[in-house]
Image 1 (cartoon, rainbow, N blue to C red):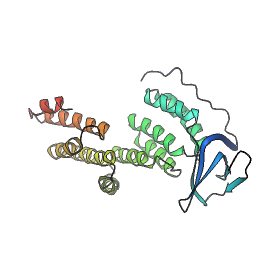
Image 2: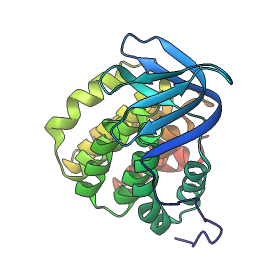
Image 3: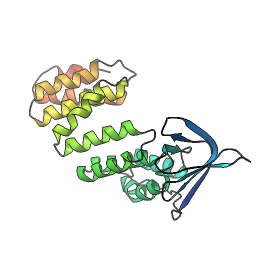
Image 4: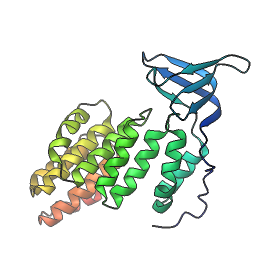
Length: 246
């Protein structure tokens, strides 16, 4: 994995109060109501302070009274994304914990935990990956779906099939094409683990053929590669057809 030399996240010591001047800060109450403001701060115990206007009052939200707070993506999170996408995984696991602590109450804890967990998936450290996803799930804001996908991969890596199946059933019924295609691919992986390779091909084909090009592209490409590899292994000449399929 190539080194991402320019990854220099802004990581001063995490203060007890994290303030973010913002174009679009808000807090989502437990009722689902969104309260917008100009700046949002999080105290170390999870208390949120939302400044309602440039000269307006500050509204306080105690833990338990809100679902989550949100600030625009901080630079440290953008830097972590670039490291993750660039394959600089050592940097991701090094800096993710501090970034998580700093922004976990401000809408980015789930996403940071997802990136950290996926590094552990890549390294086949499935137990540590599960711990990262569980940590992120306690601070869900806008990235809950990717955490579920990560958790499925972590559980599959540990061969905890019974825990995965209900999650996949829910994902297959989701209106989101990417989630449904992911579920078909995960079911294919389960069948491969069980040695049922012909049945696995059918599951991967569902992800590949049930969704039109332009939707669930990453999952469709993953499914295509799996179909090609399995058919070639099964000495089925049709693998050549799927190798060319777009």
